[in-house]
Image (cartoon, rainbow, N blue to C red; front, side):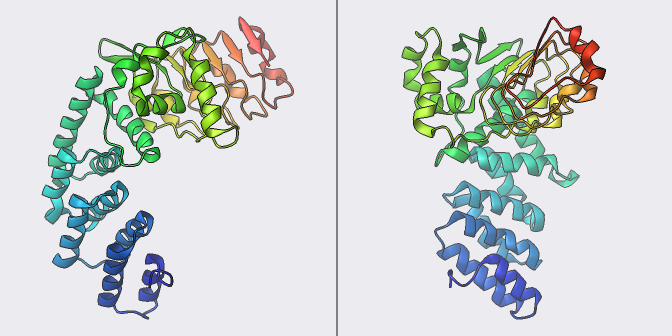
Amino acid sequence: MQRSLSPEKICEDLELNLLSKAFAIELLFSLIESSEDPDIRSRSIDAFKRIERKDDKIFEFIENYLLSDENPRVRSAAAKLIEHSFLEEGLESLKWTIQHDKSPIVLKTMKEIVINSREEIKVLDEEFEKLLEYMGNHIGIIREEAIFFLDLEALFAQEINNYKLDLSAYSLFQKIKDFDNSDYWLKIKHKHVVSLCFNYFNWIYFKQHPQIYSSLSKLQDPFIYLNTLKRFFLGESNQKSLYIPKSIGSLKALNYCTLIDNDIRNVPTEISSLEKLEYLDLSWNKLTIIPDGILSLENLKYLNLSHNNLDKIPLNLSKLNSLRELKLNGNYIKETPPSLEEFTNSLNKFKL
């Protein structure tokens, strides 16, 4: 059956009146129970939204997967369906999930449910605030900024099987310093993140091998060692492309940020919320345009976009009134637009 049927096919046949609603439901039950592929099982749970039938049997079936399935993607799909179709019946189960589930993937789903919440699930908002308070206390930051680290944890969980929320490494990240950047991977002051030197591979490797801290801390430039490991494990063409969480905008006190060599292709507009940001390094990524969000950073003094895939300089770059140093070398930009020459000449350093 699994070879010939998919949840999408079941829904299509139902809409064409080739299946009864009751039989379609039984087929989806069977797919969820028999498949070992979490993608098929998650999509089968999602398919119940298209069937638009709400009864106790479906709710009890889905609730069981929310509370007990081993795969976080399946539990996430179950949480979304309960919020969509069985909110009143499933409120306590969703609350229990926030309190007890340790998967960042599931907890990120609960974050999305809470953000889109209606007044009747205020209780979930209260539980989620407790989760952020717990995370903030362990990292040493206010709970409003903890949401960014929950999103980072969800990124790590995409890579590591059975990954559980792990806040232990963040205290060590505050002790590791990049030689080139002269700053720590994570710097916190007065419970606010003020500096972030984030490289996806470096952080996730460290999380998987925390025992290397003692030797890594003795190196003059740990980045060289970790970069060698990265090339060994990933090669030149298989690096993971980093999606910068929109919640980076919650780091209101961030002053210094490097996101070097993450294969970044897009920057969320929420970066424009970082009103105190003065130093931003996005070199060695895959950006094709200079994002508008960056051009809204009025206090930015240093911007490094070298070694990306840029082919032109936007005319509104001159909006960066505080900028003193700009690096655009290693791109496909051939010349500076005449209307920007006065602006680039006013910089202390400009590299094209």
